[in-house]
Length: 184
Image (cartoon, rainbow, N blue to C red):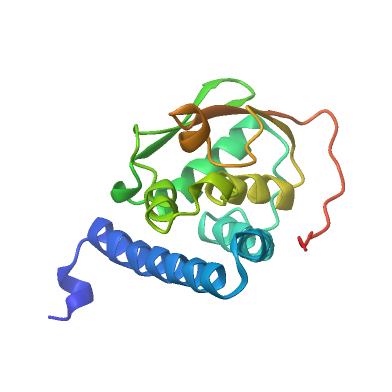
């Protein structure tokens, strides 16, 4: 029996996500040490934007939604719940929910956001630009979903307010054109 036959899907998801998040953290640390926090933030957000567009397509395919336009709350919830099931392991200590027809709510356990903990350790939390919620925003951009953030996430909410929680309000009334953006 091989390791893949012995390990549960949940344990496999944990180990793969921990490996990815460790790579992501070391990449950010290396960028920060080499170029400074402003460049590291810009590079990180640019990479997230580029990666998330591809990731959204891959998630749609994995969910059997390839070629399906996300044009209803039901389809968006199906996509996001599937994406969250695939990419959010238990160690991230977060929840995403759908409290009403056009709202996605996110919340991290107090002081448990992995990015907050890691960036605080390297001494750059006061200038860190959140990449975690930005990844979800980039999925919505790639899916051509109109949305607004409450609150608007720029820095680190855990650092600036003591908690990381908010709502993404979306609508299907005013679809917009999306082009991959890079940040300089």
